[in-house]
Length: 223
Length: 78
Image: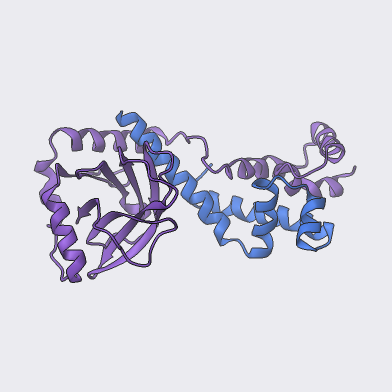
């Protein structure tokens, strides 16, 4: 097998999509030829495709900021509240507004921390809890990335899913359906513009999710 | 506990970044990659499944992966 033939197969090789004889031929060639840097890069990318990729070393700076923000959120968060704009009240559709009010009455904790410094992204942590389960929103502000972590929610049967909603201008937009069959901790990365969002809610919906919430949210975080 | 939380957050962001890169590929590159990785098909089986020539499968697997690589690097992944 020559270099050109090997190059042609690098994608299939990285994805383990070659029959054994071809895979061995590629391996033999790569072992004695250093002209195929692309092979290693494609292999790494293919490995990243694992549905639950292995934890990446976040780097000491980002890791420290996340840990500090979480620790502060658990101990003395209130002094930092002034850094954030106060929660806004917006006209919500009647049913949803009533639902949010019911949930707000059941909140056990509602804490905010803004952790930022000169050499890295701001990390915002927001913890909330209801009668069922608890949640944590971690916002990496400059990345526009948000992760919602849900703990202690009851496992659901095959006919139901948890669905996450963003409230924008009083309207609920689905942020995705969470498969809760396994129970335990659930994490969801939310690709949403959080400048526009006034609340995040979690409700129980028929399997596959609904266009709009059909039950009272079990968890709500108001911004 | 908080260490676990940080790890979960980062793992979730990673998964989201990878899935988003895959979703951004054109269908003709994304499908062969999905069949190879998630379904475990060989390139010959992918060609049969999609009804396209073997050479096309090879080039789409390579192009699609390379494009994902570029996007992940652009997003700060090593």
